[in-house]
Image 1 (cartoon, rainbow, N blue to C red):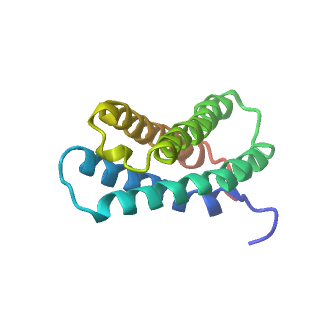
Image 2: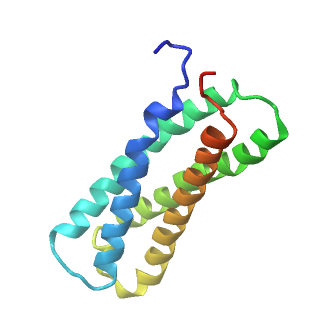
Length: 145
């Protein structure tokens, strides 16, 4: 592995795993399985996953400069990049809600907003993963030939 190899694949896995698992745990709590440890675990995972988005996006933008200008590559890159920035915003908003009110998961009036943000985050993770998989497995972006 050299310094010229793609950087993005080195950073992407932990944020995806942390955000997906943290979202599912928070949804389980919001939907009624009330265990004291769940909010603590969910917020820790969401915070660490959100922090991990920064190097993931930066490495993706660096690697983007090495991708071809092929229209098929650009067509897959655009939703991938948009989903990455969307993740930054959606999970940042969730964490902001937590910062404003540490017990936000227990506030019934905020439940619909939180569930919506968590589901939006999961959809964005799917879009980012699907388009990233298309870039690698169908279009060969970042793959040695």
